[in-house]
Length: 255
Length: 312
Image (cartoon, rainbow over all chains, first blue to last red; front, side, top):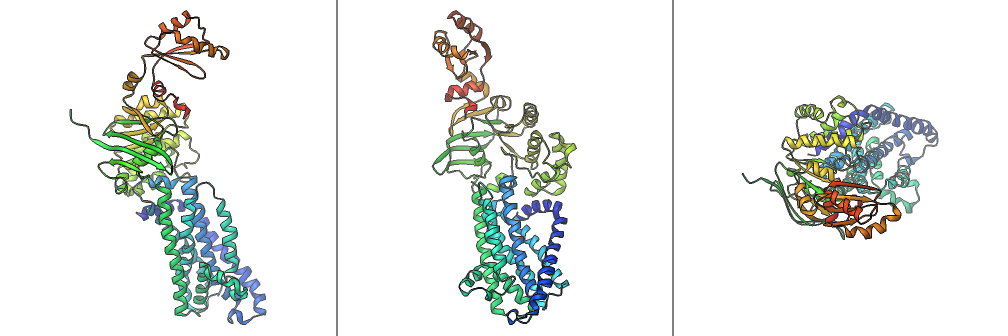
């Protein structure tokens, strides 16, 4: 039944897929050129052991990949869900059919998975084209980044579907949630550069786990225990998000 | 005559939202093939009742059985046999007319070929065939409502639920919608509709309940309700603002079954309107305008609740 709900997102996506692919291509090219190559040249001149002997480009790219997964996860959840429940009310139309609220939720999660897989495949290909990949293990960055994106989308779907009046909270999430995470979760510099007292905050965010594991895979430095730790953490967040989403959709669509 | 098949049974059906009681223990039955209406002002509990029947709102108390099934446990199976036209449009305005029917048909698990076939005949039926490839966004309110009706029929439903089907439409668009609904009724589709327009209820409903403040005030056919709760004719008198109060005192002298003094006019419920008018002149009343008309459901509602339908 969730597949039926997925179809409605696909029919909509048919209209916008070209533009979305262009932006999925453009964004990593811009970031990797400006920060990875240009800024990276400067960083590499003062190479320190902090980057583990790798170029800044090789250090940065997998981190950006995880951050970009977060971005996709947030973009696909907040406004699309709010539009479906509030502005266009297409969720209300779907709820009048045999679909259950959980089907409607999982249909959107499936679509988000698809979008994440597309974007992350493109990102990985561009990383390879930039010569930013140091290990064959980088292929595993794909599922890890998708999981990272889902760890944001699953709970944020739940949050967006329960907004009754306005979407004001979304701007706050972007400004005070996503941007700090983007900047301080180890994407651009090792987390050890942060004061020790604030590091635990970074460790608690799903993005840091996604960044750390993608980086270790891409650089070929991943260890089994650390890797499983990161994956377990992300899986727990996703599982909790899915439970919250199931509940939130039921309470909102079956009042 | 065979017993009519009962499709919906509600007993003591109640819906609460926190402390607020939206539906306060109502009883009704829906028979196959009839057009059944909930008539009442805004806030009477009509939409809450419709949402419970549509299995998207679990009852707080009481019994509700649809096709012999329980909406709480068999929601998907019941909804598969219902068509729903919600009060607010819930179309996907970024898609075309045809795509809206496709997506909705897929929700019911219908094969694409079946959807394509039904889309043709449904768009013909609601007179939107030439707009099939157009986006929904620029369509007029009446067209959107007709598309919503077409969409609600994609699964060939046994019961069609219409929540205020013509609210917000201009008079011409309303008549087009009424015409389509009347045709559906003639094709034998079972209809449930809510409305606060008495003319809509009179035109479309075989049987209706008058709802007020979450309760059912009366039940019957439109004709039957008018016969029971009103007189054959109504004399409406309108006076200059300065005379209105004085006139309100004097009308008591005119023989009438019932007199309603509204803010802007006075209604006299009588068997013979012309005779009452003569009597009004006889006691020296000089209305600016006077009108003799037949009783309507509006009069029934006024009698039952002391308020007018549009007061809400």
